Amino acid sequence: MINDTIVDGLTGTDPPPPQQAQTPYLILDTNVAAAQYDRLTKAFGPTQIFYAVKANPEPRLIRRLAASGSSFDVASPAEIDLCLSEGVDPGHLSYGNTIKKAKDIRYAYQRGVRMFVFDSEAELHKLAENAPGSAVFCRLLASSAGAQWPLSRKFGCTPDMAAALLIKSRDLGLNPVGVSFHVGSQQLDPSRWDASIAEAAQVFREVSASGIELDLLNCGGGFPAGYVDAVAPIEDFASAIHESVERHFAVKPRLAIEPGRFIAAEAGVLRAEVVLVSHKSFTDDVRWVYLDIGRFGGLAETEGEAIRYRIVTAYDDGPKGPAHIAGPTCDSVDILYQVTPYELPLELKPGDMVDFLGTGAYTTTYSSVGFNGFAPLATFCIGDNA
Ligand SMILES: *Cc1c(COP(=O)(O)O)cnc(C)c1O
Image (cartoon, rainbow, N blue to C red; front, side):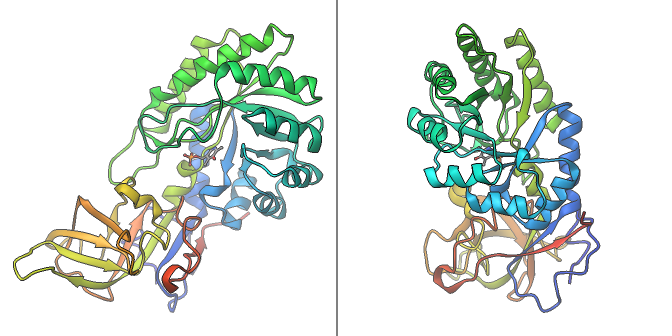
């Protein structure tokens, strides 16, 4: 049963989840995701939005965003099939993974995908052979400083290499269109896009000398969701990016972004059940609250306590006390919060429900397959559907 006072902020009116549904599960409100999408389009103006499917690949969410006009950033044949089966035009897909098997590129090409990313010469040769003539863009290395869920040096290359490879892509029969970068997920600082936009402008100038006019600037994802701590409004990010583009580019490029978390996170409420409340000694006043969800059941981003979710219970008006919060498995890393000072109601007891807000992104996809016998995270979708 959905308790409206607990699941505040959600608007969907569908009946699920069923009364007998087993926790933990995610309630995903496609209305909230669509509203987040609309906020982005208003904030950014004419900008192509590629929803990063990995944040939450729920089919009804894909369909809803497609109806709003979204394009999609995909990383695998399965994500391509998902989008196509929800009615997305292959021309609205961007294969945004820099690490692709040749046969997967070929598959994407056969299904009509014509936009691909690369960050290395070897990948470029794969693209030339398996997706001839396609539009390609090069991903730049970018700093993740300021991001709560940083990306490493796994993706991207330096601007000089990007310029050389984009020129090479033309010689290989591909269509070089621009550059992309990603400043790290849950990036809190709107000014962190500036350095990469400056580098992108440098790449545009370098390839222009070889007669190639790039026109696509893909500023990636990273736009933050509100968790325990408030974040700057999306309008601040949009205006910082627009201002950087004005400053660094003589001719304004077409803009694209690849938001995942910003669209999906706030559309989700993850409901779990208290399994055990205990103390480690007769004198310890910090309780351990064990839930039926943990690091392996979908809350992987609590690693290092990086993402701190808001937790809501039915007793939040009553007295609270400090608590460590942990998952149900027999693995000692399966602790959600031990350093971050969380306070939970003193009344909380086994069998009570707790709701984690802002859990629509990077939860179901991070749920491990049956670790220690605990099932992957189920989703119940609410909200209107196109
Ligand atoms: C995951 C991913 C995104 C989405 O990042 P968010 O921080 O969720 O906005 C965007 N682009 C690419 C290439 C990604 O891999």
